[in-house]
Image 1 (cartoon, rainbow, N blue to C red):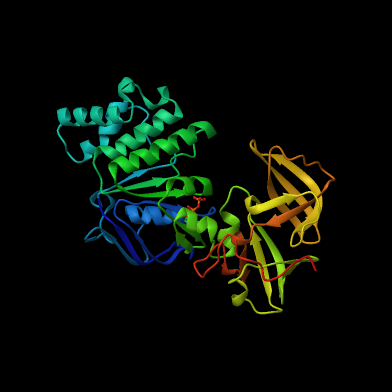
Image 2: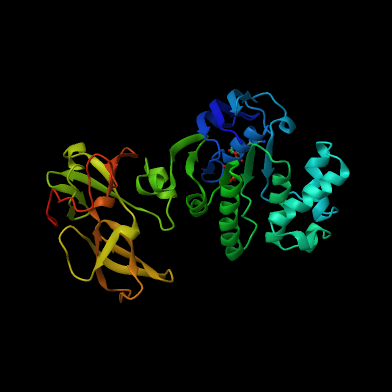
Length: 375
Ligand code: ATP
């Protein structure tokens, strides 16, 4: 096991694409770390650069005590699991798992024993003589994991290893992977574009955009206090409401409503400035009649989320989405009101978080409001 430390790590591809732009990052020893971001943000490049499959254009990488910036992949003591698993179709499960041991010149008998032991840990003992084509997607994924585990690497590098599984199996595999990583305690870097997967699995997440890290934090930090509107709109199963507003003496004017801001938060604002008022749909309560400081509108869409409903209101602030209890009667054409939970209000200036989301500067769930809306 080992920490991974990257300093000013840069990758410029031929043709000038700057896929990594001076990344400074330490993945702690034993940590389950997710690289999250939209397509093209550089997460695969970062993973492949750690693996040594891409040569960096600048900066350094250390794994444990060793500077591996120029070390070939085979000598970095890392194991990678790819999106398509990259299993050898003509080899049995045993031979696939044992392959890296063969490369390391481990003797034949010992290889077979180790492969069988690792297969047993992952529930693959009944499939040792099968070929990958005779396995389900989930079983193939376990073979790929077993192959990565067999060498007892210092670091696991996972490139979207769950994305080829169907939705249900993906959830099962996610839980399995998390338990396995805990048991093994191997430093793990996991690439995904699925924010739910990153939130569920990781100890910490780096949210990337354009070759840079836009926020680094625990799942609850990036969920509760996204550092900028990019992260705010990327994290969360339902997109955060990001509403244009103007700071007034008694709150933030959004559409034709004056929304109160919690005590402590108002100190960071300048009257008259433009801000973005952020609130997640889960933190908007529903009221059938007007409530001071709420966002009113006509119900345009109702989406069934199973145990809840996602309701889209259209009002003076534009579209506002809120999550409503499954038992609450809401119909298209109704008039509804969205009531913000004060300790979950986030305010952004020029795309960056000013404050909010129960920040340590003294907000609390029951903090009184500065203002009484609506105007
Ligand atoms: P995805 O989720 O689609 O795999 P990603 O976040 O993993 O995306 P990368 O594959 O790391 O993104 O790519 C980062 C940027 O580098 C993109 O703009 C991509 O087009 C570019 N890129 C990747 N590989 C190469 C290459 N071999 N040559 C030139 N440009 C490349």
